[in-house]
Length: 293
Image 1 (spheres, one colour):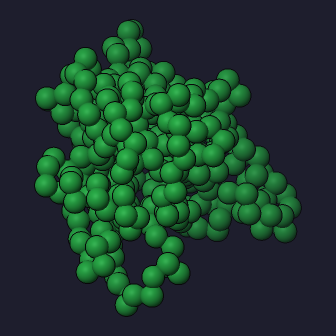
Image 2 (cartoon, helix red, strand yellow):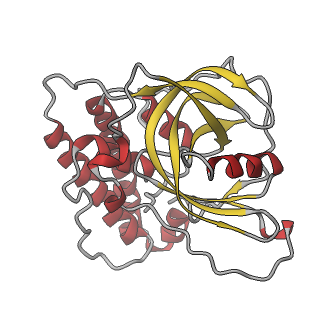
Image 3 (cartoon, one colour):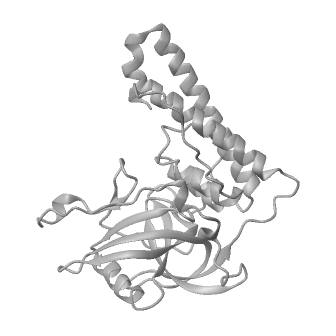
């Protein structure tokens, strides 16, 4: 599920940092499909027979309390992790479909399939460089093709922070430490989560209305999730705003993350409310309003 165009708060300045560890640019041979939010290979690269590949979409049911909490890793543990820089942000509990065809990452996959099936997904773009904080992707399903490409379904697990690069060839391997949320003090996390869910429902309802879709009752979005995994689920729906998503991934306080998401959703709701009012007064302008949603 993806929300419509988001309007981040003016006070929500990105906390992305261009890492000093990453001195080379990577040609991934990948692109992000704007409709599905998945990273796939452009169809024109290969003239293979058509395949029907099911890509799982992110849903609240993916974000169980255990999805981001492995009993083994501790925040002070230092481990080596192969890295896969991508122009997207993976969150704990989220599902990420990938097609791997570049040689160095095929080498990585062969190694991972013989070991622990885990690698680090880390956000990168031309403007900000490569981030220091990412999320472990665990391979839950894979298919190896005859030409040695791979179709993968990965699930987000723990977050990590890059301490230093161990090597850069044939693919990046870094020394990382695990990142966990700190206690949120006296904030009522359940109340905050309920407020965020309310704003999400209103945004979905108004967005459907502006796009001419039936205004039906929005389903339960939280699905009894605890506040931390729910905050990651909300952030994962902010597709199309990867820098804001990266800022949310880097936060180490569930309350701060929920408050920032609440402000973003409130701004978006105000915009949609204004667009809806314009549509009611000037029905002919509804098509132009839909173009920006």
